Length: 69
Image (cartoon, rainbow, N blue to C red; front, side):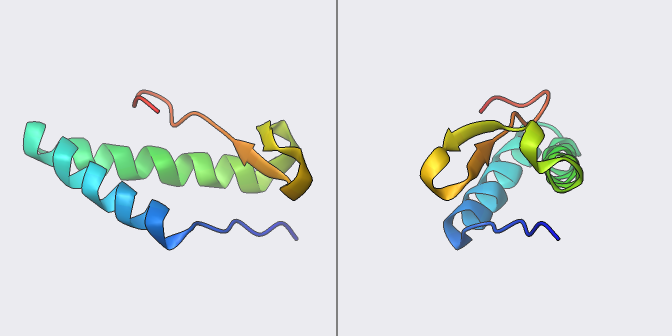
């Protein structure tokens, strides 16, 4: 089974980004988190479909949809 590991720093960055988006428009931070959660689900369903960022550690990269990376 494929595991998805998210670094604590990434979780903090996502929380800060969600707050920033939420301050711009109510509900937008929630949309960001939902977009990221959807991306995580897609990665878990098809882990080899992501662009490889670091081949030596099997780290992939995927866009989060409508939000900038």
